[in-house]
Image 1: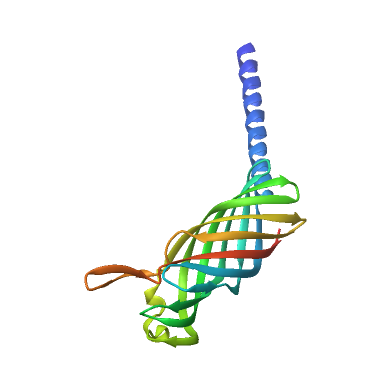
Image 2 (image 1 turned 90 degrees about the horizontal axis):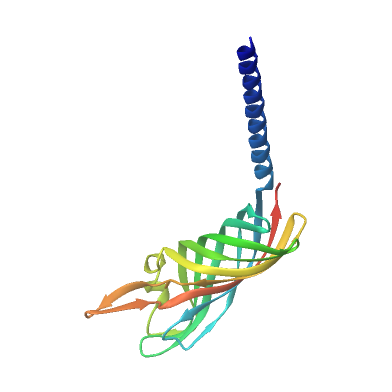
Length: 221
């Protein structure tokens, strides 16, 4: 009889412990899901090109719009992946033996940054991380006094690399479900493809993207 009572007590204890563990795990999952934020974001870009063999470059404005998620890691630290459409480019002036005049490069990308975000205070964050961009299309327009080389006829989307990689660094202010901020994105890969002419390999355009990104975001949960 004592053995049966002991077995019954142990069984009840194990059942209670198992039920408590299941409830605790369910509660933790609920808390984790509630802490994950999903939202929309957008803003404007001030972009330029870091180009070789040119006379001058001037920044142009564009915009970006898309989605983001914010996944808590520990304390004030989180990971924020984003996915958005963005416009980059610049006005470039040439003055050499091959081309003269001013042209405008415009690139439309789908961009994916993955950012490590640290809230220095509950309302102020700094963030940094890599990004990858997929080129949808690119074009070149004649702006002023273009001669010798016809950019519009000789350059199209196929002359630019489809994949761009780079690094982003920024800061933002969080107010309830709204965040506003600024970041700088530097392309680490060249936008032009390698070409060959008379056994000589060259890249044209030999340039990398760089831009300031001003944004506002809204959490949807």
